[in-house]
Length: 332
Image (cartoon, rainbow, N blue to C red):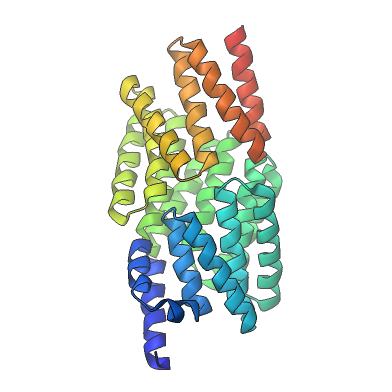
């Protein structure tokens, strides 16, 4: 491929990736000769990133490694940092938290040396997610604040939207639902302006769960159903599983317990199929709460146990403590 054709390919694929059309990225790049794809650090990275978005972790890990190795060979530190961040994101999704922190920290140092503000934003955002998961909310907000500044400097609205989404969830976990909802509104607005449908669905799903916690189940239902339809439109199968969990909890709150239970079990099955321990733990926790409400204490205890094991492995000590409180309430 000559330089002009290579640039056209890169521009086309980058536009698809920037609008969340990850299945289209895989289809487009999958049609290239393997040696051509493997010979370009940037194309290998984009291919791996798209595979990760589609829940194909084995392929994603392979192409992240290829991207990193090719980038190192060519002294392309920018792509090397992005490939490290991608490897960290895959490790996080698979529940290898300490490994993920190591990848993100290395990538952040590389990106700061290169002045790559977009990757600084991504790494800071990811480190914020882990801090929030561990209940270190002060560190999480600090990381998200750093990420927002970096993304704004880079002019990357998708990064701003995703970081606002994660910040909203942190406020939610702290119990500040007013601030969480306000931040979630900003996340949805930024995602809409960015034109990334996958990201729009992500932010809408986050806002739906906050609405549910704020006592607005009907609004939450409309929003999560819209997000779910968008996930299916863009082929985001992992995101679809996440939305099924939220919709299941919404239906439980609306009294549709049988369908809510079915969706929560479906979310668990899909989380296990995609090797997403955090999603599985969240759905098991939600199912335990449903069984407690129904007076099925044996089933509730079993799903508390399962969720607790996963949350403990992920370092989510706040969730572990909440489950211990739920166990004590069942015993009482």
